Image 1 (cartoon, helix red, strand yellow):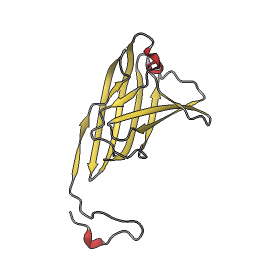
Image 2 (cartoon, one colour):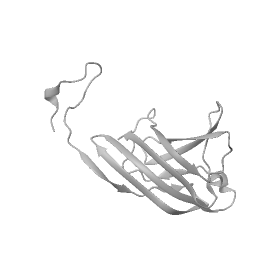
Image 3 (cartoon, rainbow, N blue to C red):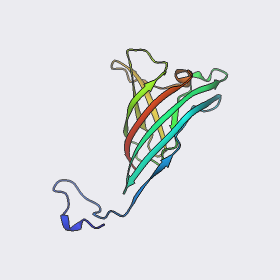
Length: 157
């Protein structure tokens, strides 16, 4: 579809007025915390729509760290398997929305945020208290049965 007849932006620079790509589908997000940690999941559903260079997704993930060996409870958790690789720019870490968490081992005064790792298909979650920089969610914080999260977001590829 060619939108060139509508004119470009009044501020900024447009690089294309062609819509040449549309796709929708499903994917399977997988929790990972590196060596010494195994996850079990009851549901790992993902849905996406890709329009041009922009991907919108939703995730329903019910999981837990079912086996943690040799002091690996502090390993950072990544949710892997977004349907497309996030744009490769070291200043591009798109923020994602967490709609719900259940049974995560975090304190009541802590908040949890999610973002995408640039040049990857990974989501990271940050646990934060007050104005601290926060820390990556660890395997030990999701070692309860039936941890649940809903995550949605938009990112560029």
